[in-house]
Image (cartoon, rainbow, N blue to C red; front, side, top):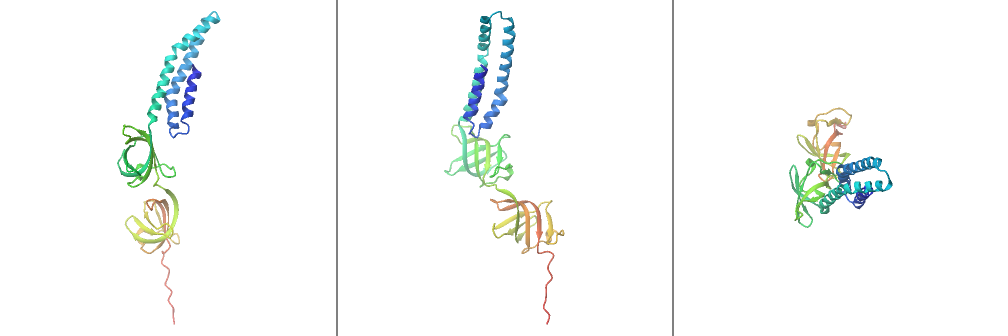
Length: 263
């Protein structure tokens, strides 16, 4: 009996091992099915042990074992039904890719390359990831971002998805150092013209260190258009932005003295 149960569980894991939902299936078995299996195992052992102590011959022992196994057959059927139900829910799994057309706190609307529109529901269990699998926040998502969604269809038309994983292919963030020239400047950001990466918007934070070329502290108001600067921060390749800016170093400050020729 116990061997049959474990064989069924192992077979289920094997079938879905290469699928993205393998982790979910294992979670289902661990959280819902495995405790039931353990309960049957302990109950069966205890029942057999107690009953065999009262048996007087081998025929009675065999009869006791058969009766207990028959009694627990209903529990085995219950486990099979649990697994069948879970697998049925995963049968029509959704895997789509497209661009975000709109978004709110708990859902995003996506249009795939064929023009089909989807409503993707986000729950507390939905994992949000960046292009290179770093953890993301929904606040980082924007209209026009390209995303991949894995989840489960919740309607017959297969247009509404309960998402398990949303991977934003447009969020490519990494820390870096960037050199360039200031072309515009505002209250809390500036535009940096770089040689290889084009124009980047650099956002100032309360923690951003502002320094001159000698390492001295300067004010934001001292940085001017045309100054050559170095920026350290987190670069978003798709949005062409630098956020979480750690340092801005202005190599045009302090001003170099002007040398005049004398006759």
